[in-house]
Each structure stands twice: as C-alpha cells, then as structure tokens.
Amino acid sequence: MSSELKEQAGGATRSEVSAGRGMLVVVSSPSGGGKGTLIRRALKNVPNLGYSVSFTTRGPREGETDGQHYFFVSEQEFRRMIEAGEFLEWAVVHGNLYGTAYSQIERERAAGRDIILEIDVQGAASVRRMAQDATSVFILPPSFEVLRERLSARGTEREDDLNLRLRNSVEEVEHYREFQYVVINDDAQRAAGLLASIIYAERARRERQEDAARRILASFKREAEDTVN
Ligand code: 5GP
Image 1 (cartoon, protein in one colour):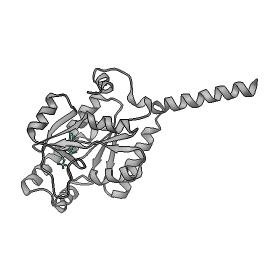
Image 2 (tube, protein in one colour):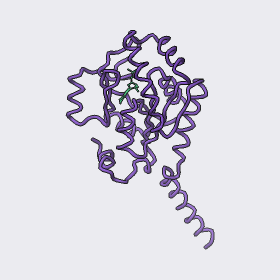
Image 3 (cartoon, protein in one colour):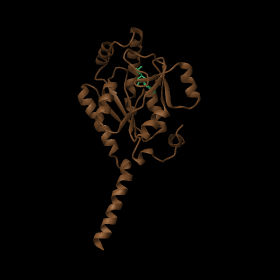
Image 4 (cartoon, helix red, strand yellow):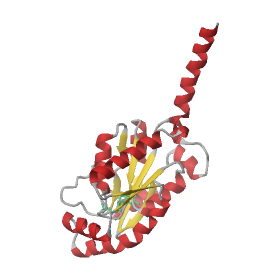
C-alpha cells in the first residue's frame, strides 16, 4: 500500500492533493450509462489527466486489449493480489471481480497527473472512505429506457448478462446521492463538457492551490521589499 494512502486509511489529515498532484476523480454509473465515452473525451481534452486501468476476472470483450481497457486476470491471481494488499479497492460487480491497484495510482501520480477511476458504486464508497478529498461524479442516464437501448445496441453482453446489468441498474442509480456531482448523460458532448468542467473546477479549489498561492505570495513579499526599500 502506498504510504500516503495508508496514512489516509488511518484517518490522517495530510492531503495528497495539497501537493498539487494526484487528485482522484471517481466516476460511476450503471453499465451502459455512457461513462466510457465521457471519460475518453475527458482524457483527450483535459491536460494532465490519467486513467487507472482496473484488474478484472471478467473475460475480454471483442476489441478490448489487456493492459489498456483492463488487466484481465484469473480469479486465482486476483485473490493473490487481494491477499498481498495490492488493491486500493475491489468489489464483486455483476458476478465478476474488479479492482483498482495501488500500482496504477502510483504510476499516474509519478507522472504528475490527476487520475480517473471508473469504478462501481461499492468501489466509489471505499475510495471515499480512504481518500476523503477524492472527487466523485455519478453519470446518470436520462431514463431506464435509454439505458436499455444503449446496452442492447452495444451488443457486447449475452442476453442473461445484459438482463443482470439492467436489473442491477435499478439499485445502482439510487446511489447517486452519495456523489458530489451528478452528470445527466442525455447528450454526450454536453455531458463530456460538464465532466471536464468539474475536473477544472476541482483543480481550482483553494485547498488544492495552497502551495501555488504560497509561492506567488512569497514573490509579492520579495518584490514589495525591493520596491519599498
Ligand atoms: P464492465 O464489465 O462493463 O467493463 O464493468 C462493469 C462494472 O464494473 C462497471 O460499473 C465498472 O465501473 C465497474 N468497474 C470497473 N473497474 C472497476 C474497479 O476497479 N473497481 C470497481 N469497484 N468497479 C469497477
């Protein structure tokens, strides 16, 4: 476990974002809610934004690449990683295991990027407990009907799996209340713009600008001394 996150897990108050890097942006939605598209656009448009590639025991879909969409691992390997304490969070979602590894967070932080975690509502709750300054965004599809259409049109799930995802969505949407932001995904372009705006606004929070502000204020003091004397 990273020492910084360990501190947070222990309830320490030190904030990793005060160092001006590594803000965690948790994005959740029911399957088919369109978060994948919105996140891809945010990654393309917002500078210094990275993505935590999750580990899963689910099999790859057509077009999915190991190490890019997910790290596809066996259940045995996933359980070994749990035992070894390699996950920031993990959960059973739609019958498969999914988890965020510390190694992914460390990699993005080392590169000086803020990090999007595309995880389910259980994972979001775990991250909020461990990293209280994480930003959380819930992507809400405009209606159940639209969600059903999107999931069917995607054609990536077998019928029983698709029905399981639809059934689970009814409970998942209830969790929107636990998130700081809600983006209604009625129009992909608008919703992607909103997600980017949330990230920019969160970066500009005073708490996250303390170091930069202190540096700037120090220059004022120096300059003022020179000017006055
Ligand atoms: P899918 O199988 O459609 O790619 O993902 C199914 C669900 O698992 C989605 O709600 C997705 O956000 C969630 N998920 C993906 N990666 C993780 C993860 O690392 N942790 C948790 N808790 N959920 C994840």
